[in-house]
Length: 289
Image 1 (cartoon, rainbow, N blue to C red):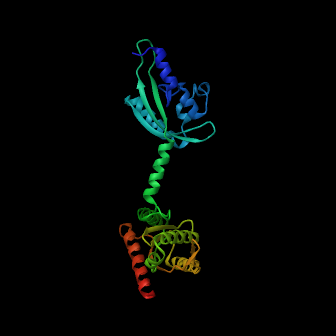
Image 2: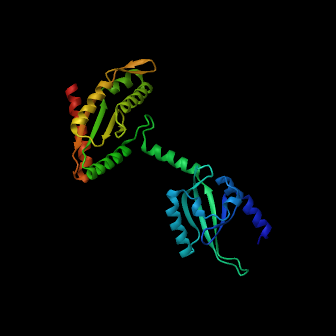
């Protein structure tokens, strides 16, 4: 058993924040790591409720976790939340809280909390999530995120009684660009195409790269007439060729429109609107040959 002096040294020198509180969550002691994390002196933290250190958006969850710990004395209890630094910055943390029974020496029951700054971990998770949902070449949403955005658009359209349209866009003769100018140039053409495509769309529209030289656009609150106007704007925007590493490249595309009115059966509308746009795109491609 370590003597009290050694235990105090471990508390003082621990790399993660350590908090001692009353059973009600009133802060009794905080180690230097926590003080640095929050930008507050131990004297300032003393007597505060730990719940007051939690970002307002997370206080309900933290309060519920605290109530569960008091009721069940389950050890340990882990919670991911955000604390607020003295300068207002939000700090994502993982808190591991344990209940400690009172001692025979008269020490009252209390809580011990280990507070770990997980900023780097959260940043990595966000990066990995972004990669899983976005095309690595163009940075646009990928097919998975395209269908997720379409589903949300259809659900909002059902609630708001508004139509939804989908565009499927395929670059014509893109294989020729790859074959004559090389895949590196072909990739740069796709990047430039994506940038110009986004410049034409509204903030509420979602452009995605579905694969290869195929792109999709989810248009919320958009009937067929307005989708047709968008197609015309896109065609006008690509009248001027793209310039890639000093090479001028004309890009032509086939575009199909799918449309669904509000109130449609969501189970079938999702697949149907994409299928209609895809069929219309191929029909346009055949006419342009």
